[in-house]
Image (cartoon, rainbow over all chains, first blue to last red):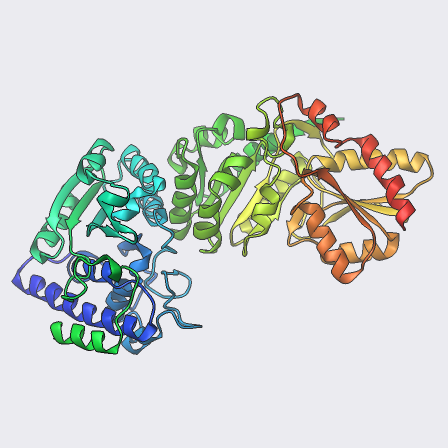
Length: 275
Length: 311
């Protein structure tokens, strides 16, 4: 973990911008994939990879590394963009997303790409993996931390709450969950489809420490992650208020961009906005 | 004949594995006294995780533990381990090709009085359909122990099917058990009985009755259902000209299907499948249920007679 200062905050902000550009380019090239939820998570993921986590791209299997599980696996482009920028693989490879034979599968596959920690995307399973990883770290008396990023719609899956119960039962203070609370799921607004609200009270009731942040404010995100390190004997969740499609004006808060991709003109507009 | 439930042998072998290897971790879903993981839990509380009544999360946690270098044994009843948590077994354990052994007890109708809701007759079919998944159904205590030790060394996901009732011990310590290799327990040239799990002992009994009638049958313990021992099946089909499969499982998708698939493509001979005929179970004592669903020594003998007419 880096000390939080203006330089680190500026780097996270700049990296998030570059990651958003990569997301647009990848999805425009692939012609399928999830734009809105990749863009909403970009600032959170940038803060993890450029401020919070202890990782080494040259040693992806390093035993002491922190582990990040993208439980909302459909946002794979944001993970791939971060890994490529960190140097886990060449950035040119980003444009192979979702193509036959590519290690950049539609949803993350740990056996195909270095730096990917889980096989996620069937919603709710990633947080459960993360709980298992946190248990293993405790058994081995290791200091590394486990991070899991969930969607708010994902919280509708029952296994999330089974995992939440287990994390509290086993006092997993080495586990930090982050909810990308962008308010939209495929069929519409989460409160209309199947509301998981109040998200903060639910996690509190399950024995978790809850921190609420603006999910696009890098200082707030980094400070929340730092604070979570000091919470002992229980897991912490950061509920990050975000905007689906953030950074691309015509996608922001529009549910139709959940599972669709920009055409060439739209991509050009988006990249101009992210210049 | 000495008897032991395969779940009891599992619990004992698990404890031995725990003593021998530090990276063994055991998970259960509030059934540790029934699945017999309780002894391991008592001996190694730091390496035992009770998931509570939450099989889906048990499988997800197993994935995370295995991804962190642990060799994980996850137990529950077969109905929950393979049914309720199917998609976690598929997408987390098998798709991830992780070192997790799903060791499920109370398989089949011999669960008994708990009834059809708790009697898994589809688990072999479910597990067999998943890529990367190894599927084992040992016949007795000694082979369960051997299977467990080999599963520890085997890299990848596996399903071990275990039962509730005590069953006759067929093997001793000198057993030559190899994953993927069927064991020919008896050699005869008139027909072959291929069975697994608790039906192996009954098949041996039937073979003796048939021998007394002058009919010589081979008996194969096909403890590994996936990958099935194709080589042995082809040679038995060639030598004996017909095969009867016997399993405490649906005739759809289980051992019978695996044998029929292998034989029909490589050495077509008449194959008759004995098992649960596309039905659910019900309450009753294990013996009553085996009788009711026709999984008896008499029925095996009867079916061999029928099968011989088709040769």
